[in-house]
Length: 196
Image 1 (cartoon, rainbow, N blue to C red):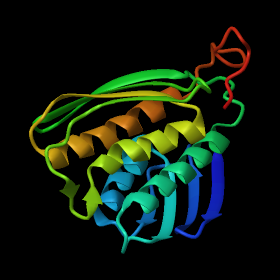
Image 2 (cartoon, rainbow, N blue to C red; image 1 turned 180 degrees about the vertical axis):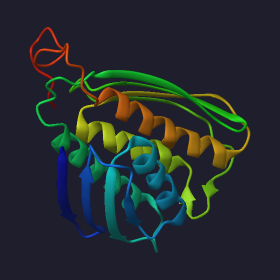
Image 3 (cartoon, rainbow, N blue to C red; image 1 turned 135 degrees about the vertical axis):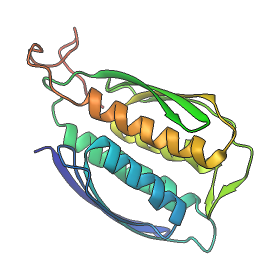
């Protein structure tokens, strides 16, 4: 089992998180931001990972610190759970429909963090979550896990559907790229290493 457990406390947030990359999609999530909790449950459920998140943040300011810091901790947990990356497929892409929304995610577990985010929300908030924080969450994840992640919204009008499709699609590519292929000897790299 590829697992990680991290606690991170700052003056702005206190976060406890555990991740089992080889789980069954179980989750217990409470960040104090309802819509964000809803999005994180999709990562767990559709990525077949067990995820526990408890975050206490300065949400009286806004959602920024809590969402970004959860992204930081999730990225660190993911990096730790992936371990030495031996035998993993490494690359994945997925196109996911969510009613009117259509989203493409492409991923390389490369050790070289990069985010390309092509999405323009037309509302400032979804529930109590600022829509600009979707991109900031994924930026924090890739920086702290060494992922090369491209997210492109191919279509959609309903902002809730677009956001949900993004999180579900990310879950699918993580599940695929982190899976094992018995043909891979060591890591899938001519350099012989994949690390942050």
